[in-house]
Image 1 (spheres, rainbow, N blue to C red):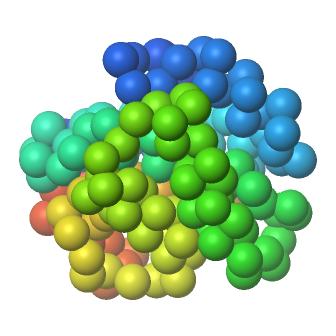
Image 2: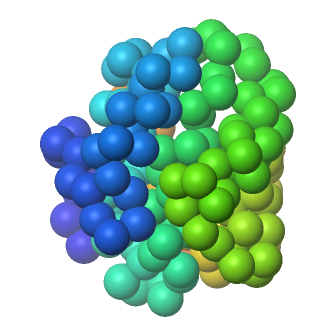
Length: 159
């Protein structure tokens, strides 16, 4: 697998649309931030798409996580409740912007809620979400550490 940290333009899919991205940017205080906004979300989306091909995670959940996980962040520094707020946003969006079954919604909720807490054990879909985010730590000068990565696919990308 090649390096996952290059910034790429947002590419919509059957699960995430440009309209959904526009909605999130419009309500997110940091939507245009290079650290926690669209550039980061797009990197996480790209990472998730690649990892999912190896982990077998639910692509729909991984793609939605990439856009939602920092969408309720209030500042660039210490915001320990941002994942909790993102999880609630995911619940609010289900049935409006996307349709998830109960299992998918629980995975998306948990992935958002706990993504900044350092956990490494959960369902393969949640772990793929977390790894997709953690593999983009280079944007803030931090090399991802294998002890905080969950999947073999993600660990194989860190040299």
